[in-house]
Amino acid sequence: MIDQNSLTSYLHEKFGGSKIEWIGLSDLSGDLAHDDALKQFGYGKPLLLHFLVDNVPHKRVLHSVRRNGFGRERDEDGVAAMWLDWQTFGRLPQHVPALDFVAARADGQLMSLNSAESVHILTDYVPGKLYADDLIRLRDGGSLEAADFHRAIQLATYLALIHQTRHDDPLLWRRRLRDLIGHGEGVMGQTDNFKLEKTNLKRCDLFEMEQKINHWRWRLKPLAYRLCQVHGDFHPFNILFDGSDLHLLDRSRGEWGAAEDDVACLSINYLFMSLQRYGELTGEFAVLHKLFWKTYLRERHDSELLHVIQPWLAWRMLVLANPLWYPTLTDSVRDKLWNFGHNVLNVENYEWNNVNQYL
Image 1 (tube, rainbow, N blue to C red):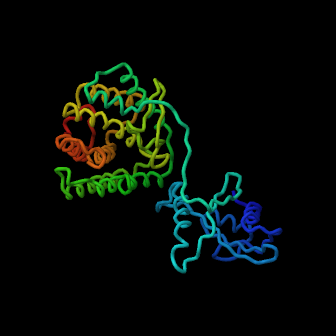
Image 2: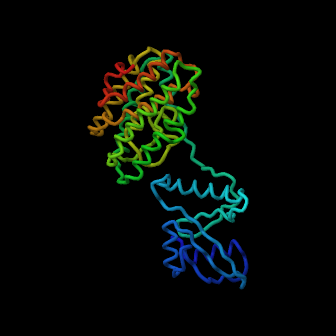
Image 3: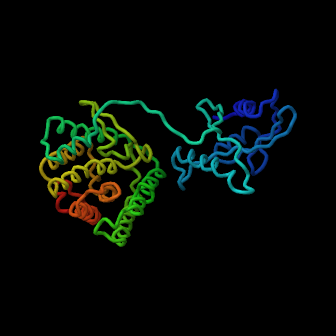
């Protein structure tokens, strides 16, 4: 929590001088006592700082972002909004300039980030082999090994475990569904960047796909109780195995979402690889697909899952069928993926144990 002492320390560091004296703190709707002004600032109102530095008066405004349902549902949205302001305020003639980019620490102390040009994260390194390598080995003619069975079970069990953690926040549920459609990596991002000229598809096909998935979004909006802990991009290139040890990479689009997102993201890859080898879901991939689904449904009793997973499967299909990401697919595989995405959107109950009917 930012307090007046934190502000004083920050101003000392920012402006120098031997003495900081306060004239007043207020929100820009009118004068308030210091404590009330700081409380209002916490609600996202700009805070007017009026102070003296060695008896020289100064006025500055400290801005924050209040959580709302218009793209500000998550903490990272606020960071992105402040970063945009910092980058752009000073570039428009006659716009009030941004003077500093400020972060608040957990103890309420303020620190300047004004020399930052970009932001990065540092992660640990873990050894391992991508799960995609296992599936590619099978696609290219390999045989099932003991580890293949263990890993399918392990992945299903892991998802069932993390999906047990629920979260009551209708704002975030609506945001997750909106991101399914409108996020740059979501449906519209995929259709906007779909290489139609390398497929048998037409613009009207992409338009129809967007419409059908958005129809599902409206069906799912009332189901906010389904919000749970997710990975968000649980595909084989984000999964590492070091022997039996599981490690994950690149969690995406927030901490909370739909369990069906993770389940769709992984399970469709068994179909994807099998189509490339066999033209349908069969053989080794049918075995792993069945094992994954049976394990997940046994470990997490979710009777509604098969009635809500359809748009998530269709979105993942858009990624896999896009020549931008997978340029070497045959027309036959791409067409079957497209049929799969369209057909699952037309059914009320997804029959995971009869996937080939959707091809």
